Image (cartoon, rainbow, N blue to C red; front, side, top):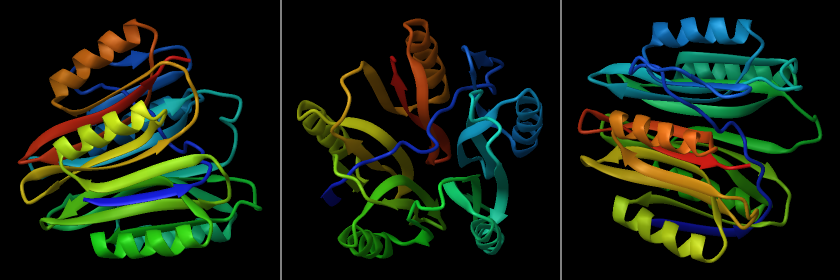
Length: 284
């Protein structure tokens, strides 16, 4: 298990989602979410939902029985007209090309998710035109050692981790991450945690007043591993779950949304060929 700590402020980027594949779709107020979508289903839903005035705020790519699946969330808000672009099924080279293109046009990467297709990495991501004064960094395709090294380097330069995505390519762990410079709110991050280590760390940090803001699951040597970010901020009710099957996720989703919670993040991942979900809900 690798442990990171740094005092810094955190701004939640690209977090939220809900289901469709199990023949259910949900819309609560001004948000819509889906999970278990094939690439074509994701594209069709994307076109329809965006056409109705929503913008993508989170996307997670993962693989089930060798086929890509997607979970995503869209929000309808006053910022829906802000210029933004999204792509999925990109190879590493295609992702790098799009990244360079959009950054040169003043866009900032908001979310990136890696996943495996036929033994190679693919990426889903979206960018939004943001404040040009924001200083940020992003990396993808990092091994655990490269991620650790980059983390140490950037945090040492005053950056804070705002998004982490873990995925497995050919049985090897890989990471994609986003850092933003500045801030002062205490935060903590971990990666390489087993389910038991994640639960233990979760309990410990929550008892110290931290709130989970991002979590990603991935497979390593046939076992689930987790990476996550917590910040010391806010006192509103929230809930988080991990290791859920599709049915358990659907059931928990229905229960918590029925209690007035709003899904703010969901991450799909695969362990031994089975899709699993980790998610966060807020009551605000």
